[in-house]
Every structure is written in C-alpha cells, then in structure tokens.
Amino acid sequence: MYFEINPRVINRQIKHLRSLGYDSIRIPGGKSKGKTKYSGIFAFVVDPNTKRKYLICTPYNSSFHLKEKEKDSVDFLDFNKDDENPKETAVREFWEETGILLSPERLDFIHKQFVLDNRIHWSQKIFHKKYFFSVTLDISILKHLKKESFFEKEETKGVILIPIKEISNFLYYRHLNVYNKRIINKTPIVF
Image 1 (cartoon, helix red, strand yellow):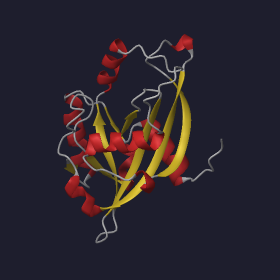
Image 2 (cartoon, helix red, strand yellow):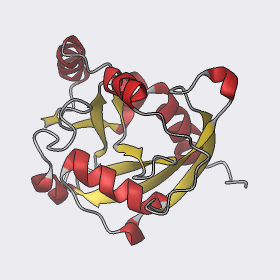
Image 3 (cartoon, one colour):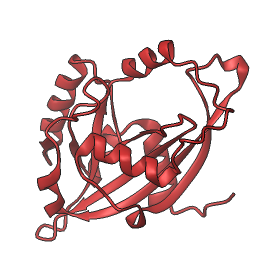
C-alpha cells in the first residue's frame, strides 16, 4: 500500500510501478463473472483529523487485459445466467483488489456508459456497459487494505491513496472523465 500526500513521492512510486509494467492508475473495478459488464467504485477516504480526502486507486497492468483478449473469445451479446448485477461486480472487484468488503447498499450509483469493446475487432462494433459507483469511507478502513492484491497479482499491484487535489495528475483519463463529469460537476444522470 502506498499512502503518500507528497506529489513528488507519488510520482516516484508511480515511475517505479511503471517500470514493473503497471501503466496506469485506476479506480478498483473489473468485469462481471459473466463478462458482460464492467463496474468500478470511486472510493473516497476522509481523515477526520486533517479533513483531507483521498481516492483509493490501484496500479493497473493493461498487458494483463491483452493476455485475456487472446484467451477470451466471449460474445458480449450472449446472456449468461451466472452473471452478477453491477453492484455485486463492483463489491467483488473492490474486495479482490483492496481487501475491503463493502455492502452493496453503501454504494451510490453515479454513471453508466456504453464502451466499444477493444478486445474484439472494432469493425464488429460490440459494446459493453460500464457502471460507476461512489462511496465515502472513514480512514480507519485503511487497516483492512491489502499490501498487494491477492487474487489479481498480474493485473493490479496494491493500493495507492491519491489526494483529491492530485487526482487530475495521476488518475487514468477515462476514470478522470467520469470523476469530472459526475462527481465534480454533478451533471444529471440521463437514461
């Protein structure tokens, strides 16, 4: 786990992680068991003493995603009875990547979007849904954070707490777009 508020130290840590193949900093999340959707959580941690707010993030290795592409020939239009709902996926992925088990009821829905699946040739125009949730946690939850992800050693590497003021400098651009649109600017959700 990396718990720093100094941007220079965070930069050094991220540079080291990039040398290990972790090429972006993302919110915890991933695919549902049926691989029909993605869910992620913007989990904020607040320190009541300093009033500082942090976003729980994970370093991500996108080459893991490319390896999955080779072994995974999933048709995203197929119905899968074993699939999870978006909140179940978000809670499971968050637990796998951080070690913190959340109750689905604590999650606030903030955004849904359709994204062209880059694991399938673009000419097929297959889209999947991405769901985003948010939750605010007390800093005492940090005692439950895993030093490294147990289940996803190749995909993610531990947890980084990014100070809110530094999110735009570190967070993966697609997650940053959702953060800016739905959390900062609070644009209404339209279906």
